[in-house]
Length: 394
Image 1 (cartoon, rainbow, N blue to C red):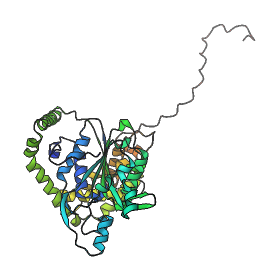
Image 2: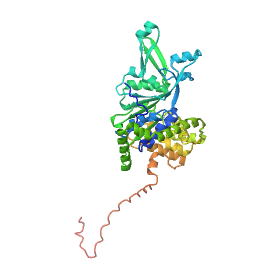
Image 3: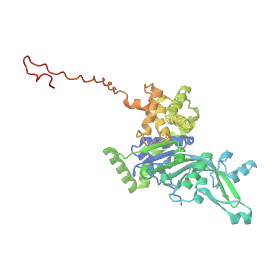
Image 4: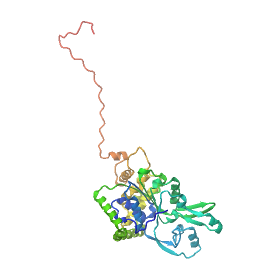
């Protein structure tokens, strides 16, 4: 069964200490869902799942068709379930309602039927109607799909999620009866890299990726522990204390969504983004697009309308680091490679490649001079009057 958390029962997002890169990536995806989601990998007990589940507090409300299992939009046919679309095309008036953007969690060990949904064949044959039991993809339409321990997800389920994430539609077929419905969602995954690697096909589907580490600063650790204990003593009271700060952040996100269409980026910056992607050998164009979207979302979130080089520098690492080709002989961190490439393209660093980048500022040792051939030792001169042996002797 799915695990759903209400906004009132989740740990307050604004009280998560440190992990700034993680919080920024999640927030930017709420501002612009087209960024493509977030992959969160890191040590155990670093608030990965807590951060994601607390994000529900920041999700805005949307208009949906009342009592529709697909969270259908009342105005956009691309976001409508089959029945609602037919009614819309007939010109019928659709009854609407408000709901918070849904967050659906995929439990570990789930089945394909639970994800895709099923068709009741008996009812379909006896009544002539498509009796569809919606799955997690239907419930996640226009919302977020969260997969904890994503690196442990079964390969067959990975393929199902990939198909829906790529096309935005889910098709269920059984005994010659099929049903297609929209499945447009933001995919968020988390996991511990020590427990297994992620398939490259799934890895590339995440717009941004962050690697988080255990906090070792004593003040931050203490603050986080005290926050957690206070929340456990009185969850409702603690959440209420944070309401003003949470509402302020939520309002900032809503304002950013409205401002986003007005954000512009200079063509020269777009060319340099592509230059970085080419320099680090990113396959395809998805990396270029995601960096551009994330930079614009950041600018809108901060209340501005023009992207700068500094904005790109803040988001380009999480957007590209997981897209680099794997080389088992290369021990350099992907995020560091991206930073070096960014410095070269945007700041004019005189590095031709990453090997030179590592050696920049270190004077190369002078080549050793060839050693002269050893001269034969001269025989010591004989002293005058010294006996040199018998004549003809050796």
